Length: 66
Image (cartoon, rainbow, N blue to C red; front, side, top):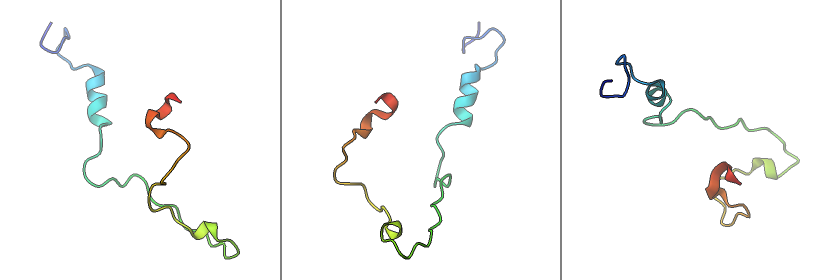
């Protein structure tokens, strides 16, 4: 056995996937804003969420455990 716990000296697959799929560095450009749809007879489609709500009835801190 060598230093990284393998017999043949190769790194485990999990090390490679962590490096490849790690967090992005710099400005994240993965998500783009949705295109605006023109609906002149309604008021709510022209509103844009630009800050977090003051109150939310759902606890968002636990991720997918809810």
